[in-house]
Structures are given as structure tokens and as C-alpha cells.
Length: 212
Length: 212
Image (cartoon, rainbow over the protein chains, first blue to last red):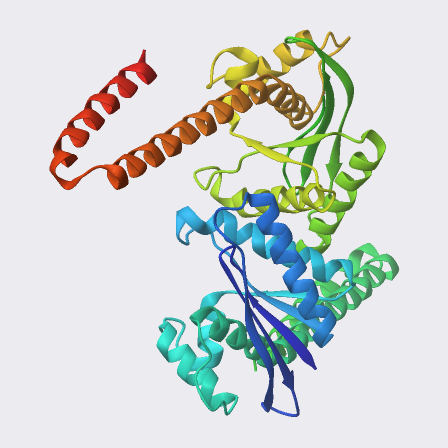
């Protein structure tokens, strides 16, 4: 699977392409930064970000776009512009029918370094090692974009399994409810208590089964 | 001039078209809301907002797009989504080469009601009166979008005059610097002090002139 990782920003938007292989193997494809001049007005800067990312989508044809999730707790003076840059990148991907995933900075750091509070130097070091690069990617936004792409490759199978498990659990729950309803319909009023007791016992067994 | 006013939002994005005439006359053209379902993922919601606004741009061909400026001090839980909706609207306008203006909520309220702290009911009432509508526009996002379009029509001539005055002042300043440089070049070393004194006197006159 080929991922475009994006560390969104108006001044510097980090972009990186990484291919995932079997297991945890990852292969570096490309990395760069889309820049926009601060003196341009906001709409024109967003257009440059969108055009820049579209160019990366054209050139590398990723199958999924992973973007760093912006929090309102981040640096207040830049959070709006960063959110808007992330928004236009997500839009460009959605226009092409590509799935878009968001990962928080701490999810990325945990995936790459083992700690959600790792600093930029640590992320850069680990990204350089994981991808076997001759020298560390610069600037930090580029390293973050690479980290985000790797994070997506490693987290998404886990997330898919989780989503699958959740949907199977919901399905089992629905089937169980349907059996209960059927039992209640076919049971004479006098035996309802027994059915209820049996149901509780079954529930208890299920509960133990899932927490085993 | 025809303005598309936009009150950005992911769940409800207010859109309104108003024509400006001579002086402060304004004419209602259309108003509506672009909605996106909360259960869709962010990228798809942004795509729906962008497509919805593009449809309004196609239908009404405004000459300028006025968007409510999002602040990070706003409701923290929705500010990111609102900023991203504003971003994709600005992008759609920029892609068509349309100028994009941002006005703060308090600038809009001041323009429409005379008070920057007016509530939604007051804005709705004044918008209804100013445009001579038979009934108040609903929901509030629609009224805000109309208010924003009117605010732009009223503020933009003032802003243009201000920008013009600033650029004229800058030009005068450059011309003055050029004269000074020329004087310094043609003056013998011994008379440099006199030129400097004359320059200071001229500066003082200019300063008084601009603050008159």
C-alpha cells in the first residue's frame, strides 16, 4: 500500500510518500515541503497548498492520504491556518475518491518512537533509521510527514481489525436480541421468568467469553 | 456588485447572494444553507461543502466572496471544522480567480446593527428590514450569511479608499526618500549638516500635514 503522509501547514506543508510491504516493512519513495509566501492572502495560499498536494497525488498515485489531526489546543495563532491547510488537502483527496485518515501527533510519535511525547529530533532520528535514509530529512515538517505515513501503514491494519471485531460483536448482539425477542413471542406468560433466567445465564457466558 | 456571503460550518453552512447598488442600497438575490450529515467522515463533508458552494457560484456568478473570519477563541469543539469549511470555500473562490474577503462576526454585527455584540435575533431583524424581506430568513446561519454579504458591500468601499490612501502615502514616502538620497549625493561634505537640518524640518512639516 502506498501512503501520502501530510503534516499540514500554510507556511510549510510536509508531504511524504511511503510504500508498505509485508509486516512492518516500509520503503521510502519521496519527501518534500509545499511552501506558500506569508504575504499572499489566505485564499491564494490555500490554493497553492491544494495545487502543490495535487501535484504529489498526480506524481505518486498514493492509495490513501494520512493527515496529521489538528487540535484547537495547539498553538492558537497558527491553528486556524493549519486546520484550513489540512482541510484543503483532505478535499483534494476526497475529490479523487481516495480514503483520508487522520492521526494525532501523539499517535504518530507513539508509532514511530514508542513515546507520545517524543521531540522532533527523536522522530527525525527514528524515521531516518526506519527508512534507511542516508541523511535525516529536513525540515522537521518533512520528517513528520514521513512519520505520519509510516504511522498510517502500521496503525491501519490494527484499526481495520478493530473495526471488524466491533462490527462482528454488534452483529452477534443483534442476533442475540433477535433470539430473545423470538423466545419472548413463543413463550407462554407463565414461563417468561424461566426464559429470562436462561437469558441472563447466556449473557453472563457471553460476557466472560469476550473478556477472556 | 454581487457578493456571495458565507457563514462557514460543517453541519450548516449559510450562503447568501446580495447585490449592491449606489450608496447603501442592497438587493436580496438568494439565501440558503449547505448541510452535511455528521455521520460522514470529515473529508467527505468538506467535499459536500465545496460542491454545494460551487453550485452557488455557478448559479449566481458573484464578483466577490465574503466569508466570516473564524477565531480560535470561538467554540473550541467546532472551531477546527468551521475553519476547514471556511478554507474549502475560500479555495473554491480562489480557483475561479474571485477575490475573497474575511470579516469578523463583530465587524458584521457592527455594520448591520451598529453594535458588535448584537445577538442573532437582532441581526436577523435588521437583515430582514434592510433587504425588505417578507419574513425573516431561517435558520440563523442564513441570516448571518446575508449580514456578511451586506457588511462586505458597505465595508469594501471604505477599505478600498483606505488601501488607496495607504499606497499613496507609501508612494509619497518613497519619492521623498529618493529626493533625500539625490540631495545627499549632490551635496558637498561640508554642507551635509545643513541638508540634514532641512530634511528634519521637511519631515516635521510632512508629519503635521498627514495628521491634520
